[in-house]
Length: 131
Image (cartoon, rainbow, N blue to C red; front, side, top):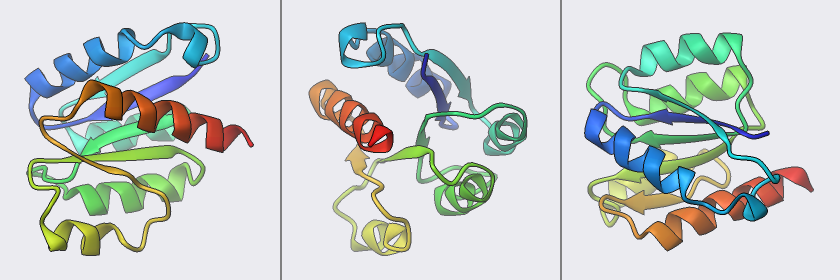
């Protein structure tokens, strides 16, 4: 079973993400519904990542207590093989690409996202991790 970590300071985004992830057919995952944990606090998510290994993280780039880049950097010291997907309200901003350029293979999706695009990033990321 896959374990997913969702981190966004907006609770409604976490709710929508949870519904989108739950709708992914299990045949596209590992045959089971993923275990999904959602946090509106990056610091709480990092504490949880000290306790549990996750397969995938979906995080917001702009959060109040910790930037998405700082969060990802700190998460990768704990879980370097985690599949990562970044969400941002301004995906066309050159600063977004520059901020994430030091992180290999981190797709950036705009808010709002297309569900098919998010699903594809998740399935492809997990498949790439398995190989």
